[in-house]
Image (cartoon, rainbow, N blue to C red):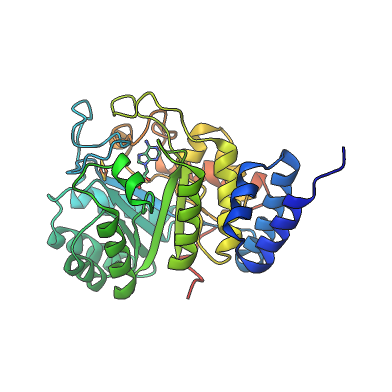
Length: 352
Ligand code: 5AD
Ligand code: FES
């Protein structure tokens, strides 16, 4: 049989032009052979190397509260999950994580939590200020969901410079299928735009293989992100959590996630792109494969061991028993093994 070269040509054009017509993007994503995928990963890696080389940025993730006022259908810490054992770290415990992380070479701290209004703007600002005071050479990233613009302004003023807020899906109908009715994609996008206007480096993103996701929705996400030009893009496979309405759904695919990481790199050459914990959860070498498909960030966990097992967004999450130092070392070894080096730099986005 004659070799069908259509996909190779699509990948080449995607690399040259950072985009493809919608039909061709759809055809590429739904018909890739193993060989074509390898070719795609190679191209994505070249582009990543051009901008970031073989340096992988480290972000220390501090999961500081699993209380959440929201009820996203996919999420293990949704408010209706009575089985979740709730916890909050104290300010002191959070600062302690940062100190430990600093000694381990982390220069970015990501404070992530459910939408927990116990942490008022004042409390968040106080924590951010203290981290910046103690570690002026570090960046603070917040990932605490939707708040009014004024709150975001206060966080920025306090010294937070980056904000992660996945858009989850840009299609309003799909958004409604994944979230309780009071949440809307319009408010999500409002938040993302506010954050960017205020001056944050902003991250959006979505799960791959979430319930009801179609190729069409994914294409919408890809073009939305290319247009929005985020500094960071977080994607990982959807993984069911038994105590949620989506507990018996199928998890997102490994290959699908890797294809999308590579396509996202080609569409957004300078974006910061993590190989996520969810990717590492569905395959023992998932994060390594993510890096080899064009990602350039890893986010080891810095949360105290005592609470790690409680921040369960999905089942089977890795590293819940490890100390921060172990995760750091493990990550370094994993990256060295595939010819990369973990960078102890702040790692600011090259996007604008
Ligand atoms: N599987 C995979 N990712 C999930 N997230 C939440 N629940 C799950 C799940 N079941 C992701 C969401 C959220 C991020 C913090 O974690 O995309 O934005
Ligand atoms: Fe917490 Fe969705 S369940 S943000």
